[in-house]
Length: 94
Image (cartoon, rainbow, N blue to C red; front, top):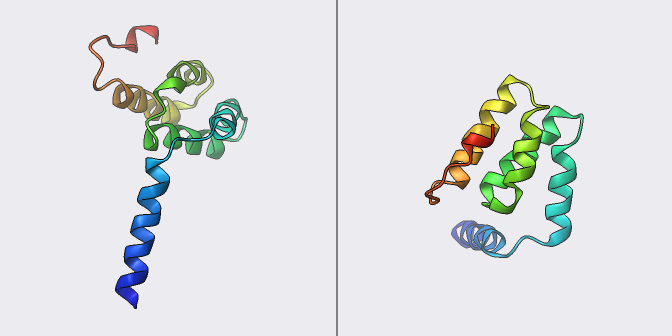
């Protein structure tokens, strides 16, 4: 029974990551990047990386100017990760 539960949890989590992220969720992440709450901003940055939301990299670049030192490093890493397959680097925008 335990193996079945673990298998079901694994399959369910894989199904969530395979689905397209709804538009309202993307909008919530955009708003979260502009938040004054550093924990919320960090979570939004992590979601962008986890779900490979390359369409939000412009918002990440905008959030860079308002970020603290820890978040600036995280944002740079996420932008590099999102552009790992692109030939042109967007780091010149920083």
